[in-house]
Length: 130
Image (cartoon, rainbow, N blue to C red; front, side, top):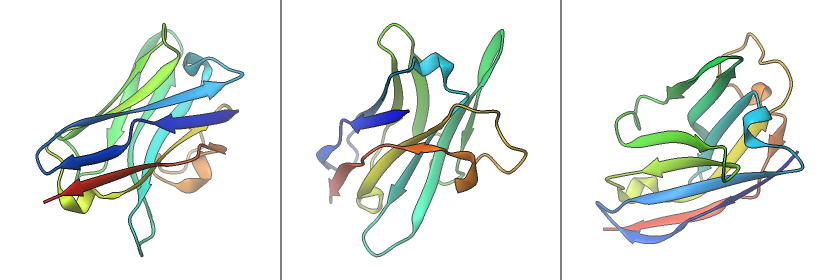
């Protein structure tokens, strides 16, 4: 599945942004796992959040401790979009943000592990000025 992330931009510290991730060729509800990552300049990729589908039940959401309470992952089936709402942005949140997904069975590895994610979208730049 191809994924398209969008919604990045230049904002000031304390502002909010909502990133979108749209799959092509599949519905967002058919993705068993959707995650958000980022890569800051000169740094490794960093897992931020994920949403795991459970048949007939609500999604489970997971967050990196450093963004818990500021970032929220959600899904709008009608718009076929997964979102990452980011609040109280800080300059250290400056990075390229990526969405990733798994259509197959979720592995027993940690949700934050790269091996969980089969498909990756092109990133969207988020720049937070102080």
